[in-house]
Image (cartoon, rainbow, N blue to C red; front, side):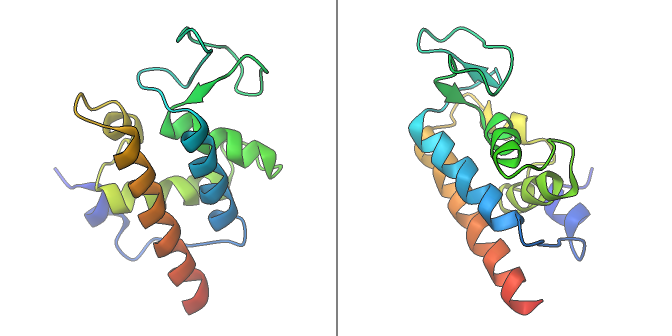
Length: 128
C-alpha cells in the first residue's frame, strides 16, 4: 500500500490560499485540539457545525475546514484539499484523521505537523 508521500509526489500545488488556510488551521488547533470528533465544546462533547460559537476545540481536519471557510473557500474546495495534501505529505498519512486520532498523538506534535506543512507550502509558493 502506498503511503501519502508516494501518492502525492509531484502532485503538490500551493495556491495563494494554501498557506493562509494552513496558518489559520494551526492557530485554531493552538487554541484547542481534540481527537475523534471534528469539533467539541468546552465539555468535550461533539458540536454540529464548525462555525458554532460553542466550538472550543477542533481536530486537524476540522481546523482545515474551518480555516477554509474563514477564507471563503468551501471545505471541499481545491484550496482546502491543497492544504490537506501538504499536511498529508509531511505526516505521510493518507487520512489525516488517522494521524490526528492516533492514540499516542499529542497537540504539540499536531502543531509541529502544521508547522512543517506551512514551511513546505511556503517553499512551493516561492518556487512557483
